[in-house]
Amino acid sequence: MADIMILGCGFGTALSVLWHGAGHKITAYTKFSGEIEEIRRDGEHKRLLPGVKIPEGIEFTTDISLIKKARIIIFAIPSKFVREVAEEAAPYIPENAVIVNAGKGFAGESGGRFSEVIGSRIPGNPIVALTGPCHAEEVGRGIPTTVVSASSNRESAEYIQRTLQTNSFRIYVNDDLIGCELGGALKNPIALCCGIALGMGLGDNTVAALMTRGLAEIKRLGTALGAKWQTFTGLAGVGDLIVTCTSKHSRNHRAGILIGRGMSAEEAVKSVGTVEGYDCVRIALRLAREKGVDVPIFEQLYGLCYEGAKPKDALRALMERPQKDERERFWTD
Image (spheres, rainbow, N blue to C red):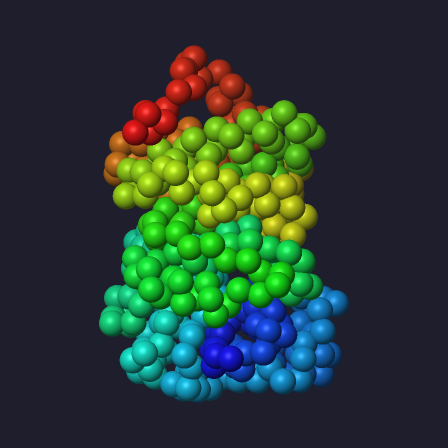
C-alpha cells in the first residue's frame, strides 16, 4: 500500500476511486472547498464524474501541505494550472517522493512539457508521465484501460508500474518521456478537428483521414522536438489519438462538433469547459514554425480557432494542397 496525494479532483477523482479500490491510502487535493462539499454531500462528483460512487475512505482536502506525507504525488490538473500548483506544492514535497503527471497538454505559452515545468519548480524528485487512452469516465468505473509509465528514470517508471497497476488498469513502461508527453498533448487539436468534421455532417472517411494525416504531423513535430517516432505508434500516440478523436467523453470532440455546426471556437470552448486542443494548437503551430515543420492540419485549425476562418474553407484548403508522397522520412530512420 502506498500513500498517494492526487492534485486535482477532475480526472483525479477517477484515479482516487481506482487506487483506493486497490488498497492505497488516497488524499485528493482541490483548492475549491465547494467542490469538496458537493462530493461529500452527493457521494459522487456529479459534474465531472456522474454515477461513480466515491468511497468514504478517500480524504479530500484544500490543504496542499498534506503532500508532505505522500510517497507518490499525482498531478491531474488542467495544463494552465500546472505551473501554479507546482509552485504551491514545492515547499512540502518529500525528498523521496515520485512525482507523476497524469495531465496532457503544454504548460503555458512557453510550450513547456509538464515534466519540464514541474521539474523546474520541484528539482531533485523523479518525474513520471502516466499517459495513454484513459477517459476519466471509464477509469472511475473500472473499465479495462492500458497506459504507459514514461520517465528518463527507468527505476521510477517501473516503480509506478508495479505500484499503481490494478486488475483493470494495466501499465506499460516507456523510456521516451518526450514522445509520451507530446503524444498526449498533440492529439488534442486533431481530436478537435475530427469533431468539427462530424459537426459539418462529414463522414467516417474524413475522420479517418484527419486521424491518419494528423498522426503524420504529430510524428513530424514530435521528432523535431526530440521524441522517438516509434512512440507515436503506441498507447501514448495512436492509442490516445483514437480514443480522443472518436469518443463522446472527449471535450475536444464535443467542442469540435459545435464548431462544425457553426458556433465560434471561443463560444464552443465556453460551452464545453476545458478544451486542451484549443490552447494547444496555438503553441504547437508556433513550435512547428520554429522548427520548420510542415503541419497543414494544425495551420487550418489555428485559422478556425483564432482568425475567424470557416470550416468549409479550411477543408477546401487541405483537400486542394499540392500532391504529396505518403512516405515520411522518419519511416526509414
